[in-house]
Length: 314
Length: 182
Image (cartoon, rainbow over all chains, first blue to last red; front, side):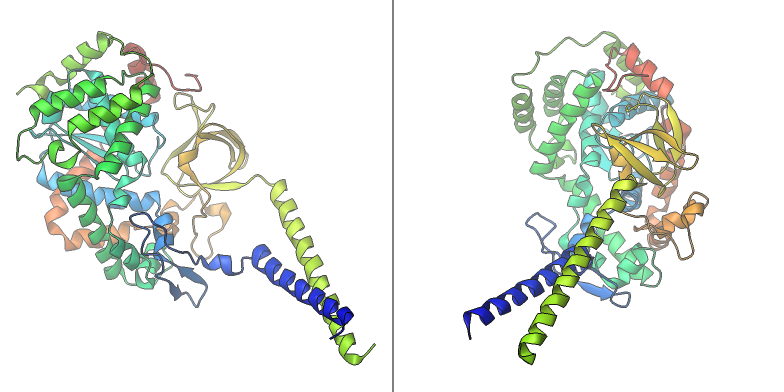
């Protein structure tokens, strides 16, 4: 082949490559099909479960299913988890205490990175001696009387609620769902129901929903979110507290109070959270170099005492 | 020029033509995007459009799930948006909006998006009321928990008005968030 002819051929090959590249990048092309490779995080491993449905119009992977998990889905999961908690605990009926905790909680939530959720935040008191608090995905937050007793003032109550709001804001509930559920969620039978396209298998969707509810409920009530997510919630809680103007150092005082109140063998914060000693270390490190602790305004002690006197009575 | 060479030349010319037209299309697409503000959709219930980028500022308009807005400007955690016609301009917290299109049922048009919230919810991607209803049927042991939950979440005492929040913060010597308490 002559040099002239060879260069002509090279030019043609180049042009054809250009056409292919442009077709891929300017049109939806292959990227539309969302073929993703699973990442390395806890729940992204299920990556390559690809199902083709809707006459080949769409391909969804389990990874995409997780990425696209909507606030609406969290809302329904959160309701089911809250129903589980309310089946096990009794609600503490004290309108004054409830109103006060709601005011503190809603003020903190409004200053979080997720001020609005699909169904809104709710703060519910539980008539239980456990030193405990839970957050269901979507913003339904529970606090037991035992935890109220561990708090000495409004800023410490705010520290508990801010920690729970941080779990909601960071969508930690979703992280507790096992990989196998995401694979099932990504299948045609379930996705057609979940996407509202029509068809599909409602019973299969309800099955996956129930499995996800079980995963999250068991973890938050019995094991907790795990060290990494608890640490993140502790740090994000400090940010929320400081935005509102609460004294962040009160979080450390709260941890000490909690440590004193834990009863060995009971299912409470001691079982579902890292040791107070380690949490104090995390918080101290985060606050190092910042402003010194300031005394809490008297009003934030007096209104706390007034609203919660009955709820905190032993 | 040999017939073989001729064919090669033609192929080259056609390929070049495709390249040029693809580039022109890309440019046209870009131009179109630049004209209209990027659209986002509401992903929570009752999302407030506020007069200033602060949760302590007044509410100009409340939007429903799935409603589209045009994004005019991005601030820290807040987006300046244009909603509905005649247009209302205000600020929404970024977490209330998604770039994901909320799917509409067949035949549904933008004009009646607002009119039919329930269909929109069903059209949005997610576990829905149908799934919850079936789950409740299958789990009778949770029924009392669901009933308690419904009473609690529907109790107006579970919410807080803007005025109450501002008063509570002032009395407690707490600071208003960035953006001021207009």
